[in-house]
Amino acid sequence: MKKSLHTISYAAVLGTACALLLTGAGRFTAPYREANAKAEEVRNILKVLDVPFELGASSQDLLDVFKRCVRQERRGDLTLYIYEDPDAARGVQAIAVPFAGQGLWGPIRGFLALKPDMKTIQGVTFHQQEETPGLGGEIGSDWFRDQFKGKTIEDVNGRAGIRILRGGSASGPNEVHAITGATMTSERVEKMLNAAIMQIAGEDIHHGQ
Amino acid sequence: MASSGPQTCGPCQGKGLATFKAGVWRENPISIQILGICSTLAVTGRLENAFVMGGALIFVTTMSNLFISLLRSFTPRGIRMIAEMAVIATFVILFDQFLKAFYWEMSKQLGPYVGLIITNCILMGRAEAFALQNPPLVSMVDGLANGLGYAAVLAIIGFIREMLGTGNVLGHAVLPAEWYVPNQLMILAPGAFIALGFLIALSNAVRSHEPGQGRP
Figure 1 (cartoon, rainbow over the protein chains, first blue to last red):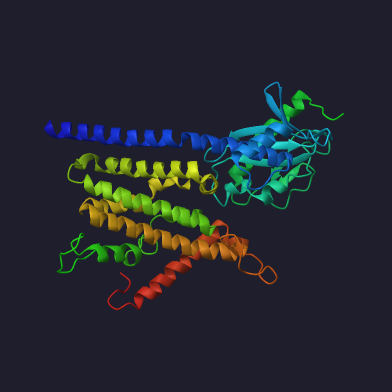
Figure 2 (cartoon, each protein chain N blue to C red):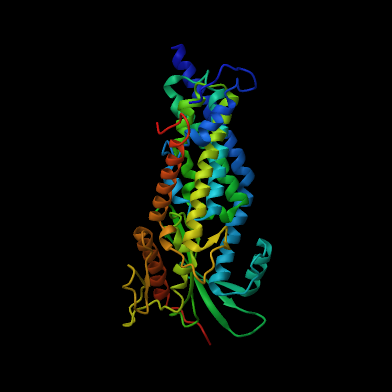
């Protein structure tokens, strides 16, 4: 009896001490983590839209550029981020839509940017992912993302959708190469991109003049 | 385990140096005990990642060994492993939060591997094999030494893989692109196995020449 009482009180005290410590640390770092996550999102929107900004810009500078150049618009369930440079008056430059889904280890979130024709891909970024570094984590690397540039979100027959295929076999206007050793991540990314593409096709968005 | 000589002076009862040497070299957690291989293979594609991961492990092994040793006489045997896990997990999460708050880029690069330190066998191994039986200070030395032993192996493999795989070290070009074609294999998972295999073979070869310290 005495022994189990000791065990229970020990567990309670240790558990409480650890929990308090972690809660304290969590609260202390929360504003920093949130600011980082927000800046990361904004940086990705600017990057995917090809909005020029300084490489070492602070979070505040990024937010300023974002507010000045990017307009947000809601279409159904979709938030569009529309890049329209107020100084150059060249009209709409690019439109980004968010996509999200479950990756191998955790959620993946990113943006898909299209040229004003709403067919040609301007770029893809991932601002949240916990994929295996060196394998699935390569979705964040330039070689993988750059493949999407200039591809279209429909095949030659006009069917909406993009395909991420095993190395060597990607040749169509809507096909890119998957990551070797990261089949699961590649398949999931393909699925979430296509979900966003279907939404775009469904909303039938037209931009331009 | 550290074998103490006849001397019993100093804050670690004369066991400090032997414990330290055992952790870093004689019983190195990776090259001798072959523990913590998963993260060793996963995060060593770049030297910088290897440094931060090594730093994380040094922090966690040192602190968890200290606290587990401090608590060792009160800890009920029946729940000692869960108690060890709680202490280890606390320090791992602390480090992870710190990275997420102040080194966001690095935290992104390491992905889930900082959190996965909780399951690293080195931590449980040191807690069970050392911290439960030894006083706090020498346990801390043991944790620090094992962390350093792990970090050193990671740094060596990270250096080899980044240099051969990309031609860079810490992002600076060292092997000129004119004549060196980066071997992508070294960045991928097989490259990690190859580098680790050579490293273990080399450390065994060196050890077999040490007087009185042949292959166990």
